[in-house]
Length: 300
Image (cartoon, rainbow, N blue to C red; front, side, top):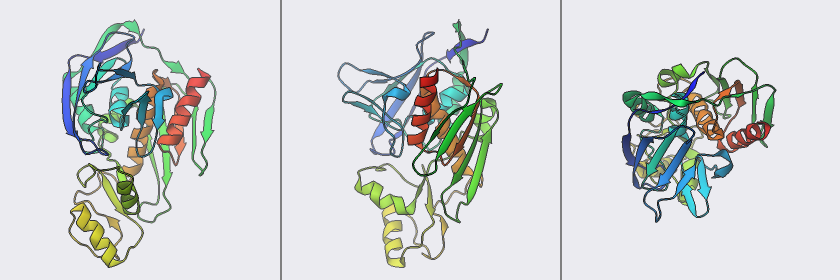
């Protein structure tokens, strides 16, 4: 029998939130068997607790957002991915703000902290969902996701953003034991053309070159590009030179696709049961990830 697991001890991480820009503290605590993954907003009256449940996802724009009544918790996917990959079934996350800290835009620090405190077996059987038939969903813009029977959990992800800067890419994960080394440090990313609209929508207030890969793939006028780099606090560059604005180079050529794989794991963690099956995804994003998670739940 494979048993459920929780953390051996609590740990705390702090940073600003990607969208709010607020400085937020998250504390991950051990939880009893059959507790599941839950988040507690300790900054609100009554300190309400929300289940990390795919059916409670109320927004998927630039991140996965849990919504319960008037309570929202944003950008949970990186922490969820770290817990899932580490085999943690039960954890109570205490949060003093409306979103998870963004840290460096990856799951690295969550994964590192889980590895540091360690995990422990509990006196309850782990409740796997063994996929016994193909389950698939399609989006409106060519997105496609499916899961099919396999003797273990694995993923193959393909992205195509229609830009020569990235090209068509594939990333795979055959064993969650490799998540820490191969996937966890893949950073989130944004295209330069998206930055102004996102700022105008009141998002990415905490975004910077330290927590996101910024991709410049459509040429702007030099004047407009200068204004944008000034706003980002980046040295002015030649607007004709497409590429990445970050001083830190990519860890892998397909880092953006590895991050998409990371996001899928985080969004599938909201199913509440570890999966045994092969996931194949083409042009994934949080919206179709959640549609996919709900489809799997409906087939359980």
